[in-house]
Image 1 (cartoon, one colour):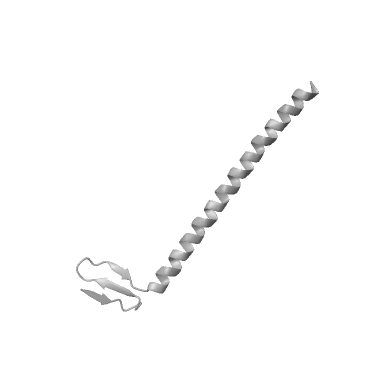
Image 2: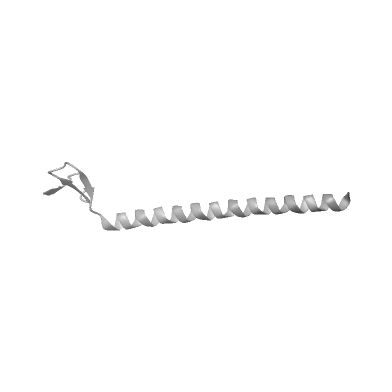
Length: 71
């Protein structure tokens, strides 16, 4: 059985397990949207770092080739 928490109507308390449950679906959906956006942002950053590292490696190769040409 669940009872509404007095301080916040969006929370209910399971009387059997004593767990407090957030029953506000819109708050949950907003939270999940923020989590997905943070994950997407993190993925974008990782992709950018990989691209920079690839460019660094290519520049090293070009530098080595130029040094060979000069010698």
